[in-house]
Amino acid sequence: MASMDVERSSPAAPSWQAGLETVKKWQRIRCSMRRAWPAVCVVAATLLAVVVLSAARDGYGLPMVPSSWLSVEDVPPSNLTTDQLLDGLLTAEFGSRSCRSRYEFASYHDKKKKKKKKKHTSHKPSPYLLAKLRSHEALQKQCGPGTAPYRAAIRQLKSGNGIVTADSENCRYLVPISYRGLGNRMLSTVSAFLYAVLTERTLLVQHDMAALFCEPFPRTTWLLPSSGWLGGGFPLGHLKKYGKDSKESLGNMLKANVLSVGDNGNASWSDSDRPPYVYLHLDGGYGFYDKLFYCDEQQRLIRGAPWLLMRTDSYLVPGLFLIPSFRDELERMFPEKDVAFHHLGRYLFHPANDVWRAVTRYYDAHLAGAGQRVGIQIRVFTQNKPLQKVLDQVLSCVRREKLLLPSIQTNNASVLVTSLSSWYYQRIKAEYGGSRVHQPSHEGWQKMRDSSQDRKALSEMYLLSTCDVLVTTGFSTFGYVAQGLGGILPWIMPATPIWSTETGVVPDPPCMRAMSVEPCFHSPSNYGCAARKDVDVGTLVPYIRHCEDASWGIKIANESMQPLVA
Image (cartoon, rainbow, N blue to C red; front, side, top):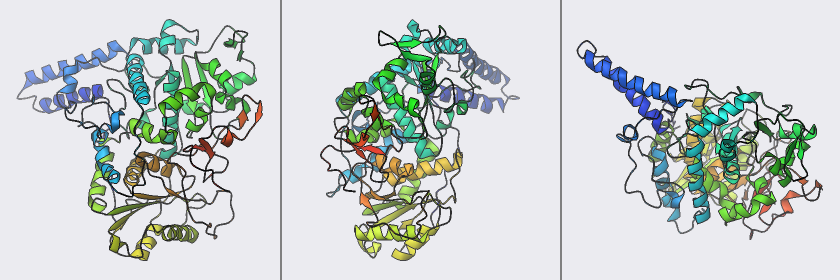
């Protein structure tokens, strides 16, 4: 079995940080020869001191180093094509050395566009979406860490005073609290980003993203300053402490009448101490008052909050489409609504160089020469041990839909299997023979927040996204990300629910074609804000449907797609 090792390296750093590391490296090299060149060591130390002092002067660790320092080794390419820029989703303001995936991603997907029987989206982003992205990039630069508005916002956060000022009116912030596996964290980050764009907030993410992804916004950072930054870190401490019982949550403040709608329709507070932040508890087990987040009235209440903390592990985008005040804007951004994640995921996520190196090496070694690449993503939720039923379901699906011929050697196909277990790979390879069945890794079990496993998972999501045909396990966020990045309409295998006792029966049919490449929102609010009662949220607008793999969930589909028959 071919294995894929992701080299460990330093987290993807913003360009200013890369400049600082360059100075440090230069100093170490020169000072190793200090006996011969003592004067050089003095100069190097002086340069490093300038960087550090400028960082301390600017506050919160963003050195204001000369731009010439940052562009000597990693200048933006001068000949980027429209394909490389993903039809305008990306800008040409980044260097290519520090983040190779940003401009190389397209070349690993171009071949799919040229196939006659293409089964992938070829939708271009709308001019309005591109304009919104450019506007948001300017906002991130204006309000991000190291700027005067950010320092003012931190001072206000420390003071506990939430009164709206000129600074907080222009620069407001959203901090997602993501958790669970990498797929969940990527879906929740895209959700938070879109909400930040809609509400004109600066998005700041936790530092675990730095080891996996490059910076998405030019000339700034999206990383929330940690305690190790010069000038101090984020004053609210450990974000994991926030949960359904937090008194700062929107739901609990509404329930306690701390926050309500005033006579003028604006937010009204029960006391004079308006908090500088509101916590949004949008977990799967959230309560009635938390779900009021999806109502226009409550959106007006939190509009002026300088800081929002958002905890979720889900893809909230279908829920945002159901908020009337956002709907017109979203429909302008996404005229073809069922490719929202396809556009936003490719815009936001650019694997760090060590991850991307693993992707390209494995692709070139095992997938590049195939006439057709078939991806099979297997996730078992019920047990850690392999299940014969799952293998039977996979084989039944690929045979029924003619995704693989009896001998894959005859049609020049390569099969990529991703699973925590090697058992499925070994049996699929035995079934079809030859050397064209591949599995990059098999970790045994999922380890949350394990950096090595996260790197491998990210690599495999991107490898799956290069496939021509994709079979995924229902309810799996790993599969959602892969199909969304690649724009691949997958065949979904219904997963056996965690609570089910049926482990030996193969579903009939074993798989079904997805109605769109969009992920499923597993925990929507069923409360109809206008009706003031629970409603079927899968019938409110033509392009929001119930999911194929989770009947209680909702997803975005093409308006012309016929509803699935139960």
